[in-house]
Image (tube, rainbow, N blue to C red):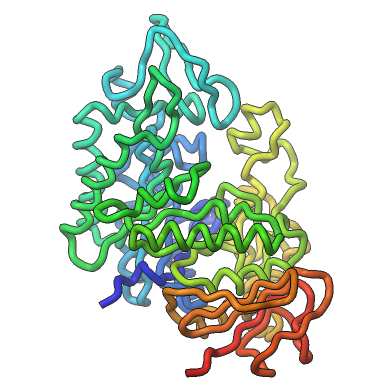
Amino acid sequence: MVEWWRHAVIYQVYPRSFADADGDGVGDLPGITARLGHLADLGVDALWLSPFYRSPMVDGGYDVSDYRDVDPVFGTLADFDALLAEAHRLGLRVIVDIVPNHTSSLHPWFVQGRRDRYIFRDEPNGWRSLFGGPAWTQVADGQWYLHLFAPEQPDLNWHNPEVRAEFDDILRFWLDRGVDGFRVDVAHGMIKDLAGVTLFDHEDVHEIHRSWRKILDSYPGDRMAVAEVFDTAPDRVARYVSVGELHQAFNFDFLEAPWDPAVLRRIIDASLAAAVAVGAPPTWVLSNHDRRRHVTRFGSVRRARAAVLLMLGLPGSAYLYQGEELGLPEVLDLPDEVRVDPQWIRSGGTELGRDGCRVPLPWSGGAPPFGFGPGGSWLPQPADWAELTVEAQRDDPHSTLRLYREALRLRRPASTLRWLDAPDGVLLFETETTRVAANLTAAPVRIEGPASPLLSSSEMAGELPPDTTAWWTVQD
């Protein structure tokens, strides 16, 4: 039997911004549970929860102080168990984030001065933080500790067996509760070569992931893990999903690709080749909690609709980010005083950071907070999102929400891709189940074959319009 994750569509939930049940303006686990019907109706196979653990929230929960408990802003462990039970009742699997590269500076280990579990040195090197500024901070006795992200996120020392044993136990804690898998944050960054230049993708990190795979395989139900590996070539990324390691890795080349047919085809070919070489499924993603929403990145909702049909027509597994099914754009004009992303703060306001893709979802009504919760929203929503709510789009046959629902209803698992001859600027291919044509040009084109498409991202009248993707059923 084929493992579920090889062809799954997985929906990312950013808990702070999905739905708020208690009225404090911040999304929470009971809010997610109450809205799981939306995901079941959408037709996804699983949801991935960004961190909900105890945290001072310096970096939106990616600074964890307790990996075995729920932060009170999100609820309780009982609320998590209720969410998991309801998701499983609806046929949805649940993947949770694990953050192994660093902890919060308020984690008991750091507070208690367990420097052997972190990376302390008498002298810093020249490494820079991914959030801007130096990657080293000095403590009172003169030593320096490493933080690839914010100073409140000290990096762990994965050469210490106590760190490895602790995370083995954390994985088992959540697997024992019934989670279906993990998204591994900064999966390529856990081992550093301080004497050299290797900040990411160190060879020794693979031994950690092989040990984690053994833990996952010891549980029933096809438990899985997906690796966050960025700024790394496809053949190097593929090593994280080779036999005996993790199951999937995110495709950042595809996520960051421009609206350019030559670039997209090159990335698709490289991604498929790298995945096939190690027997893993390719993955595809257009947006997430760290990147500008693809409606804004591509410049229009029309292109975003075409892009998702292109993505969902490809073999393998796909990831959706909350709100993309509504066609939400990036919010670029948030007031300075409401921004909380450390990228914004540490850059002195020169980088907008990631708050714009984390604005809470609009569910219903004609004015903010659009049904997000009874007490407003922690980031302000644009007033013109009234046309983009779930309620406004649910029964509109031309809405982006309906397009996503139809695409997920019609999507069929596939493992192979064959390119077909096509006009310049058009991507045309067939899988075992579907013919897909994406016109990335400014003019309509004629595609040879069946006249009536199974589904198209914009209205068709014989020809394939500009910035449009269509599907046809492959005839046996």
